[in-house]
Image (tube, rainbow, N blue to C red):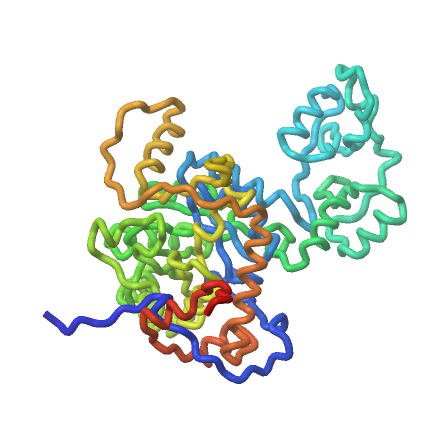
Length: 475
């Protein structure tokens, strides 16, 4: 047997403090890359787990500068719709705004607005814009059988602007005419819409992670079985990056599917999970634009116990980064982080982003209900390979209750996690800790921190010393 290597994880090391050039920790720059072409303003990504990331979480993550990855444990159309909800939540310009014919009734228009989650409808006769119908037009209206044409703002009273108008000029027009909707015209046809609500969102979340059109960025996961079919639907819905999420991605089948994805679509693909330099080399050669690292470090994953396989997370990051840096491919650490200091250590070891379910589970934005037990509030958190997740997935796909126990292979557990409130506050705390870590490492940016990083291995007693024990006046 070859000499056995030592594997380290976050609790086994500390970062050696260095002289800092920062006057304040708030000066630390936390911008980073998720994949070759996808940049984030903060290095935090919510995991594609059924009890963690759907559209509500993805919107909240992107507004704070990070990214949410929509889970794949649903039908292709359901996942694509979650992506669409994120993409239409905020933008500089609403492309292809919802339009209706003038003969539609007010009641029908109200139902459509509720379904599409919009506050206005463009009224068109063929391709011609004839008016705009907003929530103000049916306020206090009792007869919902009236045609929209009877109450809408007609074309002759509309204020419009040319498609492609700079945002500041559009804001001036909205302010001058005291209007909330500005249709954008090109060759006498409607090409887009700017609203005051979207402008407010742009200004309220200045650090948001957006694409070139001002829409929030969103990722979505695909598995090995229907990667191309699911990927096509997600790309059509507007997804920015695909996460090829396989428990053991260093396999012949996974590499074949990754090559199919990259040859079929022009989109960045984050591939994982892996834990070795050889895995990194093979996936990069197959076309991966980012690498996700982690075999069994999650608190709801039992892979290491069931299979006896894995590599402690800090060593896994270092091994993968040694290969990835030669190809300028970002590394994403997936799982094993309990504290903001763990994120700092992961990024100092070579990761560019931190991908987590446990850090964001239990928040308002995670799917599921708040459960009260013994006076405390919780939310459910399921490992993707847990029995509960498999059972619930089968019920959702079949649309009925499944009473018999399934014969499935399990590498995860389901648990309750403390209710944490708004994910925004969780993110703020994690980013503050990371900025502090960058300062202690004598850097201004994540890259500088990584270059300056010096790890020291510690004992179990040293880790106990690191923990907070509270004040003991008798000592």
